Picture: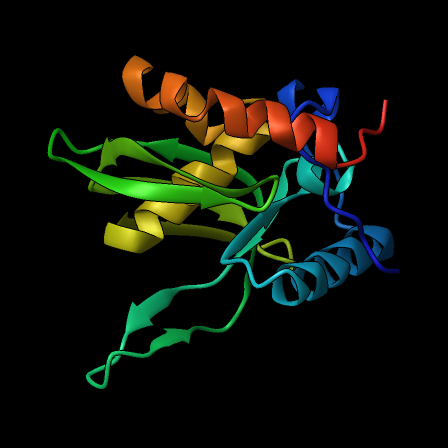
Length: 177
């Protein structure tokens, strides 16, 4: 099933998602549909609330710059019921974007490293230490599961600088209530 992105202003983006109790065929199909939507919209991550499902699942893929200056994208991965712990004291500030806030990028400071525990589609528990871009994208998508947007983590002056763009998104994109 083709999934539609929910945009800034949609209340579902501010609602905490529920844990997935069982990995059913419907959850597996949702994960596949989310990967397809992430690829279609040219994203590096997509959380279930962004496509109208209040479930603790997101998909993502790694991204890196090759020697010839081209971006490459890794194989999509599925994360179910993530728990992020042990953020490093070392932080890094980078521009972040979001499919639910098209064409808006804002500086966000996040820990450089994080520990994650989650289930994959087979129900296996995966534990990993993530750093750099992979840590950032997982923290960003996990925020979506908690009703938090990356703009909430921006410095007040940076957040104020994009206010007109936020209002434009509310006017330009359909809201599902």
